[in-house]
Amino acid sequence: MHKINTWEGRLVNKNMKYLVIGDVHADYLPFKRAVNFATENDLHLICVGDLIDNGEDGAICVSEMLKLLETGKATMIKGNHEHKIIRHLNGANVLLGPPNMVTLNQMETDKLFEHEFRQMVEEYCQEYVKLNDTLYFTHGGMHQDFWEAEKTGNITRRMYDDMMFGQADYKKTFHHKGQDYPYRTYEWKDSVPGHVKLFVGHDPAPLTGEPNFDSFQPEPTVYVNEQGGTTVWLDCGAGKGGKLFGVVVNSSTNEIEDTIDFTQND
Image 1 (cartoon, rainbow, N blue to C red):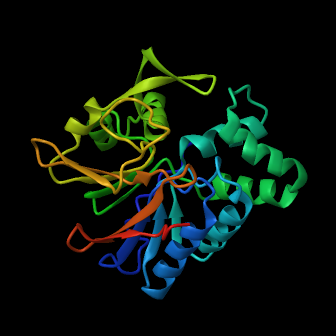
Image 2 (image 1 turned 180 degrees about the vertical axis):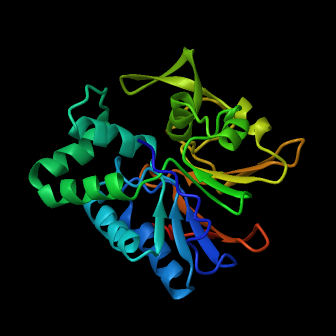
């Protein structure tokens, strides 16, 4: 069962502003700066997924996020890392890599971490969120057919998978530290409708296709297709040696008002 939250009718103020951050990957210090910035400036925090794995601070990141979710001050998108860990905890046979084992090894001795993670994912995480039919937030991307399917309510399992994992060419792989990763593809970006701004994470080096583990985009990437549809990639490598960025979005104008680096040479 998929929990889809449109926010429509639930927001007290549809003209409010949001702080949208990229993948955190258990990098607590920049995440805490982002939380403080959102609180001090009365911004609703949106994380586009992958709060955990890679870094060592997964427990405190999840605990902090859960407090925000419980008080209605944040929205959490389900990334592929949240999806993989919760499936493993629920007994599914999934392929685990070193980033996942950082989290799972901590959960072995910290049962509160596991409990709060389960609560965050099962009660609050969403595959995608939209606001005013113009601002969309997900993790990996949107299938080319999603936009028509949403109108009729016929969103498929494949489309939900794309929201978490993006799209890839599984016949072409990139080898890194003992694992093979598929090259990612981005044809979906040209299907984003002209009135939409889509905010995603997942790719710290978007549009190259190659999973890049050694260098990351220095700031969020913005792509505008021929229809005027916009995709904003926010993952800048936090928790992997890169940075955590956020953008301030005004829902009354649908514009990005500021771009902020929360890393500060950690």
